[in-house]
Amino acid sequence: MDNTSIPYAGSLDKAPVPRAVTQAKMDARAAASRSVSPSQKYSIADRLEEQAKTRPNANFLIYKGKKYSYTDVNTQANKYAKAFQARGLKEGDGCAMALENRPEFFFTWFGLTKLGVVVAFINTQVQGNVLEHAIVSTNSDVVIVGEECVERFLQTPSLANKKLWLVSDDEIIDKPALPAWIDTTFDADVASRSGESCTLARGATDGETPTLLIFTSGTTGLPKAAIYSHMRWLTSGDVMVETIDATPDDVFYCCLPLYHGAAATSVTSTALAAGASIVIRRKFSVSQFWHDIESHRITVCQYIGEICRYLLNYADANNHKPKDHSLRCMLGAGLTETSWHRWLEYFGPMDIYEGWGSTEANTNLINIDNYIGSVGRVPRWDRTNFRLVKFDTQTETHIKDENGHCILCQPGDIGEGLGMIINHPDFGGGRFEGYTSAEGTEQKIMRNVFAQGDAYWRSGDLLRYDDNGYFYFVDRIGDTYRWKSENVSSQEVAIALGDYEGAELINIYGIQVPENEGRAGMAAIVMQSGHEFDPVSFYAHTTQKVPNYAAPQFVRVSKAADITSTYKLRKVDLQKQGYDPVACGEPIYVRNDKLGCYELYSDSVLTALGFKPFVNA
Image 1 (cartoon, rainbow, N blue to C red):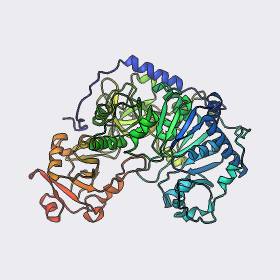
Image 2: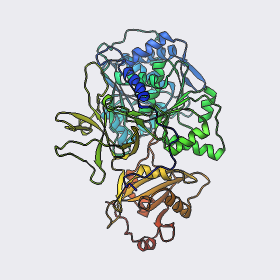
Image 3: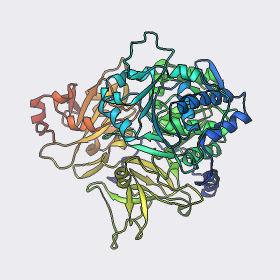
Image 4: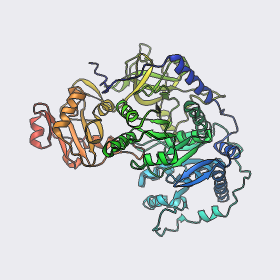
């Protein structure tokens, strides 16, 4: 068995699409990506204003039964823009905003954009030093704060020197008294303004001008603010309109947080480009998902793999598997092959556009063939800036040739995904716009990769591809570990074990074990309500699904997952805690191959199995 890969359970049930067919779709996407040029005087605000003229009475936003037409949204954005302008904000300034998913998020965002202000989206779940870092790193002296988020600012008094303008939340009944450094007059200021169009100064704004700062997920360390130009945001929507054949009749579902790239770019830019509608849900709800789909006749939904797992588990537990619905396509990342099969079985046929990329990426992959399990395809290497280069997961270094250059992967090889950085004056494809931190930007660039003077963006992700050019995500660099002289992918183990009966989710990571080389696998398991972890059945499950060396040596039964607000699993703190019973504070089990089960942790069990007490490195 190839020790670089653990096979998924199940198999593909579709034949590969002819390469020429896939390439024709990719060429159409490439043409759409040139819709806005770097020097073109065209912004997000221009597109909103165009749609308000073209489709004035069409629904743009739908929230809790209330509908806002394109004219309504544009009118509100004008009022917000005039209030911002009167308070001194102008083109080129930076302004942060922290609001949950509701119409005022869009009014604030588009109002700032009408002035040419660079808008920083702030995670509504953070406070303290993380919140302070976000505001400072985006150079924002003004923060627009939703009333639902104000408590987090009150708990971060170091931000009292900033201008904090409050946007009230009608859904809050008991409204606390606020200190004087929170400006509560902004709503009245907006209400006093006219919503008619006017000339707002954004004369220097063109396609390559920064418009958004969107933070990375922050699974390790403090998040970094990635820069989005008007061109990149707008063309991403134009490309997806071409990809999914979006029309004004489509209804998009926005249930992921708008401060993150998936909702703020993929959903919003595509819907705006198509002249379609967006149904907003403040927070994702497993129990209300299909109710929303059916009641609003939603056709397009953005997903993260974890929410698909929650929905499948909910469907199982409640025997609720609706197939008579309007959902025709899904866009997202992280849907495993097993979950993909189950999704189509439970909920009926639909297009699923699984992809690979990141907030700051200058390249991406997307599965436009519905080829189950794949994150995308490269039919022809001469028409993409994406490259996959060999990477040694043991030393965590790139494998080089005799000239010191990287080596391209062949089918089956595991390597790191890179994107060639292209800076062309006439189009934006391949540009790496980087972060607000120059140091952070430079850390993501590799130079002299294949030739002297070239430059590539580093993804930090490991992938592989098959003979038909279909790609598969393997792991993040650092999440692949080595145990008993074998390479183990935490992602692939988690996928293989993910269908353990009663498990809500399984997070796999490598931990250091005293007097052992490499890292041992550990699983943090969260069980569904009404299910208990069974150390015997889980052992049997591991023997059926993965090689012995890849089976978790330790299991931690957790009450809740350590997960970001955008449903990405964190591992850093879990790795630090290891199998230390004091640090974990939760039940720990140790694998016993002789007994064919996992034994509840004790010093005697640990010693009998040849392990030493955990030492935090």
